[in-house]
Image (cartoon, rainbow, N blue to C red; front, top):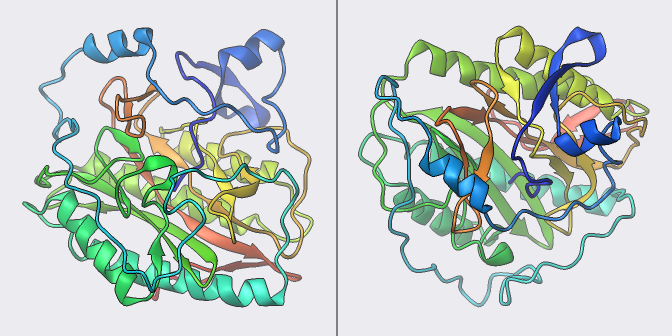
Length: 354
């Protein structure tokens, strides 16, 4: 799951940045004539769409020539229960998430042992969920499959009741950028869907996501998905002890721009471990941060790559983020560990060569 929407996105300006790549900075950063604040800064979460955002959403120009359907939220089923024997994270009952610790988090050998286990389970459950992606299947059905698989593997679905999120994974279809809530809408031929699975097992979270196709997807949609995956994978390749965090965002911006797509700067990767979201925050756009990676750091890389420059907007449910112009986006995510000699992809799939 992406870290929270970090700033209100009413408008972004395209400017030239490092290496000549096109990237976005927020109006506040442009006004102050500087890069965004340090990645350790905690931004306020955008909890509600503003009046202006709502007008933009309502006044968006319909495009009837799109090769995919525009997705609006549908009926949500009751929250599923978790058996008492499953170990729960602190927020499971109340929905209140503990304040994020700004201290840098380093994992020792015991932490890493448990992180490997939780990430392997997350990967396995994502693979189970992806097999359910078919025409006519509802995202609520996929949620039930994920929920049941979590219980079967003796783990808690981390998204469930996280700040009140009502389901066991995020399902973001077509114009839904992130944090889509599973509901009664059946998947249609030509859809693309991001499945974002996080599990809590033996006191540790594991987080992974991928974008899947439904039926026959147009060539541009396939290219968008391939680019999003490449952005994540190329960013992982620059991760190493004493590597610069800025190189993650610079690499993603380069890959996306060269392919004719855009990386949304509003969503971050994040540290992960005993808490769902920990320090450091991982920026997916070109930036000038000088902090470096150290052995024992575990974090996610999960860029959101969009068809074009768009305005992310939070809907009334306070979770679903859609693009203002109905453009699609795709996202892939891995949880990685910085080792003494390089990087370990904790959520890698069976057919991935890392």
